[in-house]
Length: 173
Image 1: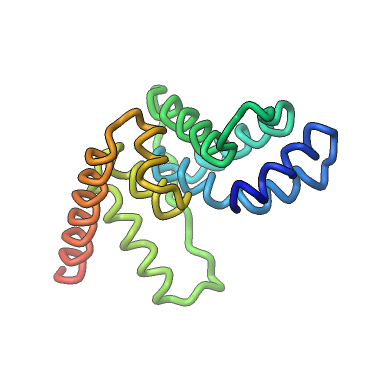
Image 2: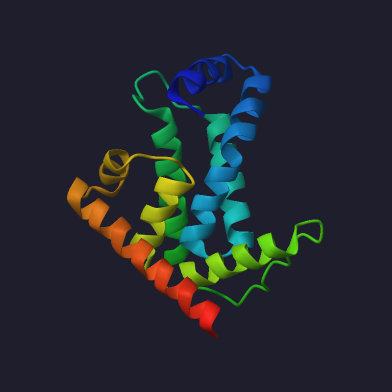
């Protein structure tokens, strides 16, 4: 979803249009969930955080003063996820089972990628997720993380190297 698509929908939401909220949810729920999941490493927690974010968005959509509402939404889920990670864990959640309708190779690839993502530290995981899943530019990520553009780019490149190494290691075993 591009900024030009999002702004009119947020205006409609502020006017009480529930259909506009549904369209925003349909377009952003998946990248929001992925960001939360990559940061928390918990499907259940990511689902809860996604629901929490969209409840807040429904109750108080951003006003016209927000220059980049898409990045604002991704910043919100990032902050909620980081806060959730900082909370003490009260037990291990079971791993999610793959959808039986998915192609076996796709499931194996996704499982391998999820396992490889655990080799990354929180900042690397966040940077990769914001760039790939949220489709943010490195400049937008630098602003969100309050870091320099070169630092974000180096972090991203380092993360990709770690992912490649983890995936190659998994193929050898």
